[in-house]
Length: 448
Image (cartoon, rainbow, N blue to C red):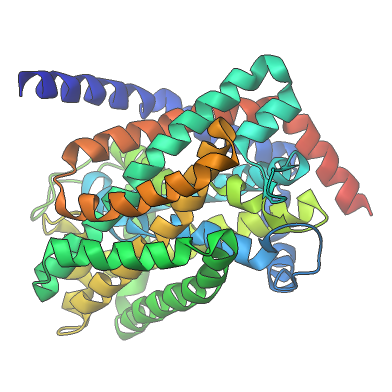
């Protein structure tokens, strides 16, 4: 136990370093740099990106394994999850209503980051031994920066493969198991086995089946959740202006202690708003470009405009709805945190059904996150060991689900969070060094 305690303390120290001010500045700074270099194109071309997303349902737009539309839906399946429900609530609990403002800022600059990631992923993608497209940070590091930087790509792949089993698998299964047990008294074992069977059935069909499932399930679940939150905001329309006032006021001024809320400095609003925003939309981590590299497209820039829409949907729309419901309902200062705070907000606004909406939403979001992250980790494993490692990986991935559902994951949470940050470092280095390529491809595309 002493050894485990020492390891936990060491990882906590490392986590504080890798998610400290330097990392947050690096991620935001990279986003600002790319946004300025792109001359704010991601914001001005939002409507264009939406059109490209809609047109991306056509599977004949170029070489690839899944349609451009399904690539984004698969990416969203991995990002729309516990971060949108529990992560937003945690940010508000620790940083106050102003944290939501800094989540918005993170998302806006994150659109430039996500765009650049997808552009490079498609531009430098390869074809593997099975004839499938592969790409992502490890490939644009190797092919874009040269062999002397290949170790950096390998480092990303190692962190990505390991992080997936935490943040993208066991933690998600555990979140679902906890939610279903507390609401419906379903045992963790039963939940773990059912999720494992469902995940296994989808994984048998590979990336194409995952893309097909994500393309159907993600729009439905996201729209249903947003509609439910929208109804609450409409029923409490008179409180919405005050909610925005709290958000903008406390983004720049400290929050005094009130009710169960301990109070928070401006730095807390910035820190937790940025950190939870990144946790939610994953801009800069390097995960999403792995699946965008598989898209059927003949243009890196076209897929980049589709990818940046994902950050807008995830944070500006879905996270905002959660945050506004929490603030409008008045329970943000109750002392609750995480998914419990979100459930309390929905339940207080829609007695009898609000809690079920959050529980079911969290369950479906977490399930699709397991599917989306399976692709990320699988492609990292394939990069390290070749296509022969794919089937063994999928077996391990399915077996990890029930283990996660039944285990105590406090240490896994900490390790996974640390690995996520370590994934970001090689990716951000590559984005900065390869930014001239992104700017050139963008200028050439839009000049036509």
